Length: 328
Ligand code: NDP
Image 1 (cartoon, rainbow, N blue to C red):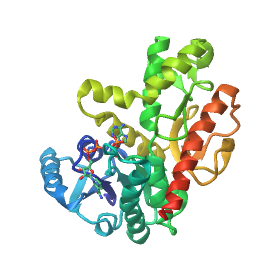
Image 2: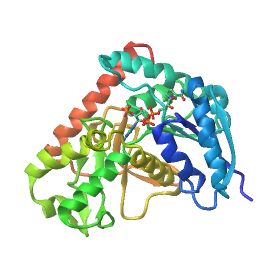
Image 3: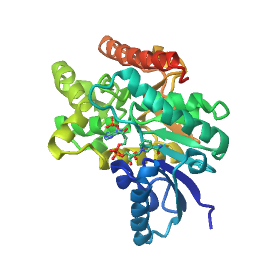
């Protein structure tokens, strides 16, 4: 039998955690033949709720679930972790300034990065979901100097999936007809969903749509503001779709992306496409041999350039702010 893979999930008792853990345990994260051990990390007040979720996981009798442990401190939570899903974060509350938000999250993601540095397995892969995800990932990475920077990533896959769905609806196709869509930049309102290189049933998506006003005034804001629209409709934030995107991200990272397509993930910039080196920004990416690679050589038109520059500028500001706070 294969050795189980250790998967640490933070914020395990939260909404996204509840939608995520059962899918991991059923084999959808890594593959239907890979046993997993879950390590649930929570703040002390939420440990009891995490224990309740663990009881339900037990009651599913998942054949691939080789064990569940619950922790209230990062040192134990990340010990031996092969995959870490950092979901728990400090949400922005009313009247909170950006600096306060970044500082509060620095207090979470700094110690988690250090614990990953000191105790995770050599092949550790980290996906940050908790917002502000890109900058939280940067903080964790900076606290983990012995872990290659490329192992710290942030989630823009939900934005990618939202964009797929919107474009399919607009073109009267299905998501499986669409390829090579890209989310650039920050997982925030400035993100840029780019269809200029995308294909709809083999044809260029921008040409099929042929409507720049729709792109600028409908598509981009609908994708960027989808989270708020879901809160408005459902009375609670998106959780199942966020968990689904986290599964997609890690699954593709480990198992590779399909030939002839790419996806979107926030990974450390190597300076490609004029994106400031070192920030964790979303790019068009493929995964090969367990590593993300930025798709190279795409032409960036004027429409795209302005939007990529704007979302990258926001990430640079966030980086400078956390630098000033001494968090990186
Ligand atoms: P959720 O599980 O709904 O969300 C968790 C995080 O995911 C939030 O930062 C949220 O950001 C973010 N997120 C990213 N993308 C999305 C998306 N598309 N839709 C919704 N959320 C998204 O939060 P809960 O409050 O239900 O649960 C959080 C849990 O984390 C709690 O149980 C808490 O105890 C725990 N926690 C654990 C910590 C730790 O392990 N050290 C530290 C802090 C909290 P946003 O707020 O911007 O929506």
